[in-house]
Length: 143
Image (cartoon, rainbow, N blue to C red; front, side, top):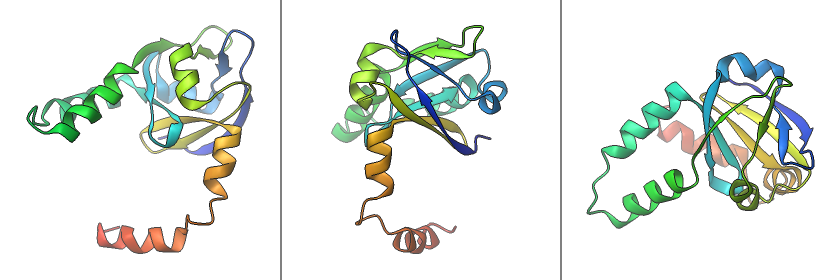
């Protein structure tokens, strides 16, 4: 499980340090892809396989399903950590997430998200984002 929020900086080659707290759960090899809300999703291999299997079940005849699968898989990249605990973020993923220098890495239960610091600040300070309203909708989902 991934928990917490960490501030890091990309180096000149597009590498970022993955918090040591996340490294063991992430494993030696993992998958990085375009995430929703202009962040990056980083999945341990096992979690990626589960998601991949679910996405394979979507009907090819459904336009939204095809678009969603294309979005996730076209940006996907296998990755691993170097000896310093850094991962290289491919240029297409840096462009998608608007990552240039300062970044925020957050843990959500089954994945890591990497955000541009500016986008993370915008997201968390959005006046339209009401956590109370979201909590009410979560109750509708049984949470």
